[in-house]
Amino acid sequence: MQAQHPSSGEAKATTEPRQLARRAFTPSRRQLATAVVGAALIGYLVHKTPDARVHLEDVAGFARTMGDLTEQDVAVVADLLAKGPCIKGKQHDY
Image 1 (cartoon, rainbow, N blue to C red):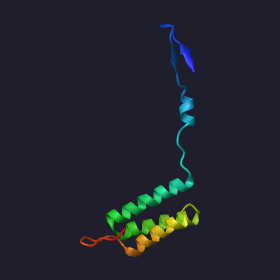
Image 2 (image 1 turned 90 degrees about the vertical axis):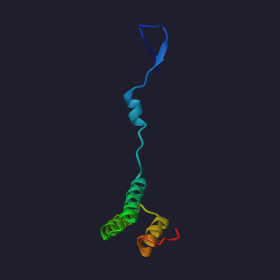
Image 3 (image 1 turned 120 degrees about the horizontal axis):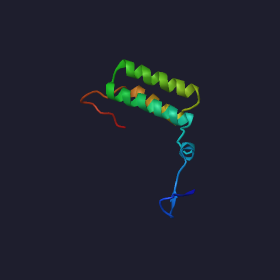
């Protein structure tokens, strides 16, 4: 879109705000579920508390029930929960 400005004879580009709003990123449910489960997983790995573990289990279980996690996603979370949190002096082979 070109607009003429009285101060010059040159055409200048303009962008309507509505055009920008239409191009905004809207994540899918699966992307949102992956982000929430990922955040819970990081929280569990960082904090290593029973509350963080329960939160990860709850979020992952809900996302699985809703069908927003793949079987591979579920297997990764289950494997991590089976190994337990990393403890100082011990490292897991990820």
